[in-house]
Amino acid sequence: MRLEGKRAIVTGGASGFGAGIVRKFAREGAQVMVVDINHDGAMDMAEEIGGGAFGHETNVADGAQVAETVETAERLMGGVDILVNNAGVTHLPKPMEEVTEEEFDRVFAVNCKSVYLFARALAGPMKARGSGAILNLASTAGVSPRPNLSWYNASKGWMNTATKAMAVELAPHGVRVNALNPVAGETPLLSSFMGEDTPEMRAKFLSTIPLGRFSTPEDMGNAASFLCSDEASMITGVCMEVDGGRCI
Image 1 (cartoon, rainbow, N blue to C red):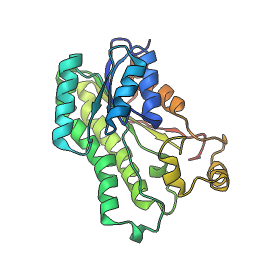
Image 2: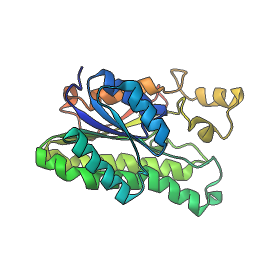
Image 3: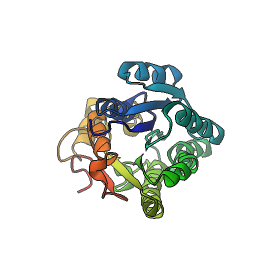
Image 4: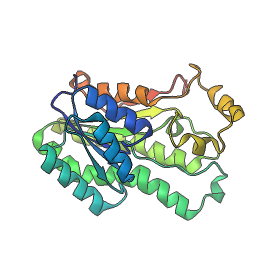
């Protein structure tokens, strides 16, 4: 129960790594607002975990929707102690010059702009309270990029830099900011990263991971629970690789 009494927002919480984080947070005692663009998925996840959890449909790249989401969270939970910026998208593997402007804009809107929008809405209240934990889900793609995912790689590199910049600015106010860098995992985005989900392509990806397996939602939940708990009260600005050795 390391998160007992904590109130958390988890974006992209209906599936994949987000679902693993939501489930772990609930087991550790947190009240969770499951934010996702998939309305039914958010509601189903909230019902599954119980404990005062509730779902909320949000386009995390829309400023008005993000502001309304935070207002709802503060009204229903009385405040927000933890923010997990997990929602993310990618473009299909292709040469950088073949990525369309629409694809580029979508990647940076969801992966980057959303972090700014939630920080704009929550940094003030967290600073006023003198406490808070923000966790950004980046990727090993932002540390050791794979070819043909250039603009996705860049968006995750942005997130790692944003994490450190946010940490430095918010530390004097008692707010910690960290990131996780997972390797590809069993999530809805896996086939998009690989281009095609075949045994041969999976074997190719796994050959680059020393521990020999993909990241799992449970891996992310365990790491996120620690970094957002009071046990990690001296940790800020860390971009933790949860990648089975991929970036060594």
